Image 1: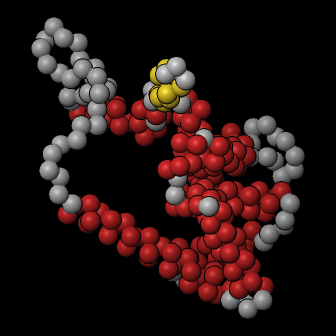
Image 2 (image 1 turned 90 degrees about the vertical axis):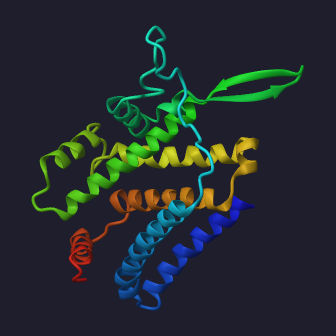
Amino acid sequence: MGSLFSLFVVIVLILMAVAGIKVANMQFFFGVVLPYAAVIIFILGVIGKALKWGRSPVPFKIPTTCGQQKSLPWIRQNKLDNPSSALGVIGRMLLEVLLFRSLFGNTTVELKEGPKLAHGSTKWLWLGGLAFHWSFLVVLLRHTRLFMDPPPAFLQKIEVMDGFLQIGLPGLFISGVVLLAAATYLFLRRVFIPQVRYISLPADYFPLFLIIAIAVSGILMRYFIKVDVVSIKGLTLGLFSLNA
């Protein structure tokens, strides 16, 4: 039910936008007022969450590291899993942020008939999450070139590498396909794995449906539906310069 409710909410949002623009001629509201309101709500929400977390009492320390800590000289320390220096902390942080190191080493435990305790790998979850986040980053960076004249050299290189297969006209960007496939996999995983489905809430499904809708709309606008890129660029630049 949580997935159906989230899907219904996303469909309603899409229909509201289409009806508001095509029927009610509310282009200014959806193109200017709503984006500014979304940014303001997002910033205030992040600040509010940070203040709430800062005020929350912490009665005891909860360690988030594993491995051998620094102790006696003849005991080998695990410098990445349990760092004791700034360099080790930076290395562990980079591996977590860029490569999801903890998720790569994560395992699942399942009680089967016998009774028998079975340990399994979660490498597919790691791969899906890594592909999702990196492809999302590439898509965002690739879109920023539309609002810069001339675009930086590294953005041009990202675009060339993203479309290296040179399939179709306009050329196929791999990041868009990977983003859609990874988001779909993460959704199907929540649906078909009973343990994950049991703990999933509508708030877990909603961003997945929203991102899938964004990816589908982007693919449609690039390969199937012609849009006025110049007007879109002008609107976006106006929003950034507070001159919409």
